[in-house]
Figure 1: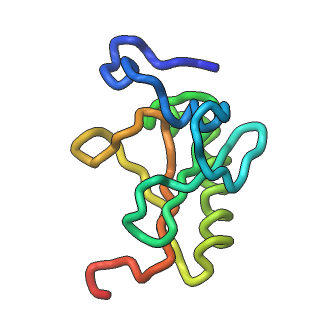
Figure 2: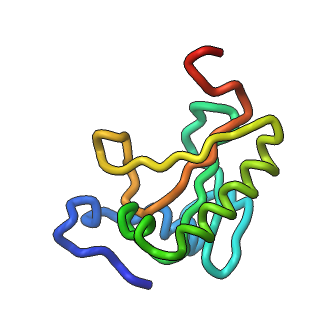
Figure 3: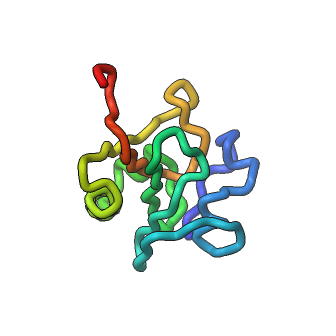
Length: 119
């Protein structure tokens, strides 16, 4: 498994996503294959908050520059269709100003409620 550069300040702590994938930390895993894992986000800002992540530890920038993003996106869309039949959003945060708190690259699946400014 490829690890990010040690110069990145976020790598100084243990990656909770890697720990969930390895089953060393609790997580409600809803889907997994050889390349992608989907689990429930511990944050509950909306009724359905899932995370689609590559098994390999990649930063967000690395994930979006790697061909694996196509697989992660497809699995995220399938999870959204399954868990949010009335609609969902796929979202990715890049950096602290965008509220990215986990270095491990991921795509959010949000749904279960009307999402928007005009609800």
